[in-house]
Length: 254
Image (cartoon, rainbow, N blue to C red; front, side, top):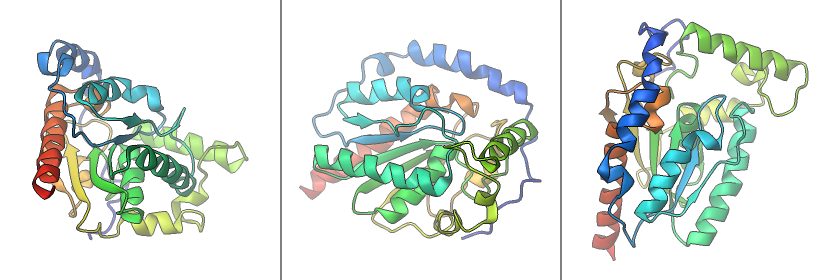
């Protein structure tokens, strides 16, 4: 796998491009396939992991659509995704075990931004419980390949963690022992039993799209803002295709 990209390779796209979120949501809400998706009796359960400084509520629109399609869904149990990465994955493993136990089958993991990084490590460590991983704008090749505003927010959270505020990552997480295993696994090869899909946008104004091009994943380009990937109609069509293919594969194997 490629070496991580440095934080100096931040995206050049104007941050104002993220103002598209409202238009993306409006377009999605007007889409008939979103409002009334074809329901499946064979849909996989889905674990949803939000992005940096976001919580489960940020993926509420996506969760509702998945349930209308027939999937059992679970959030990550996050109010804000700012915890130490290793601790966060350990908590997600509990969520994954409970969801798989209730559904009795392997789970699809969908993570946005940092949520995709956490989801990737979760899938690598739990291939018997994860069938498919979808990463939405997730800079797995360079977690700090972000714009200046986001990098400033990362540093602010780390300072809070440094002074002992609970539930926050600290400066040590970047290169210290606490997240060493996570950093190794983030760049580790995914098992062939886990399908991985990386959705990215060249007009992403938060992360450099090159850092989303995980060599172990299928790459799908969309026209979307970074924050809008959870409400973008093109992304939902990609997700529908991935989930439909998953159901077809399961039927063929039955």
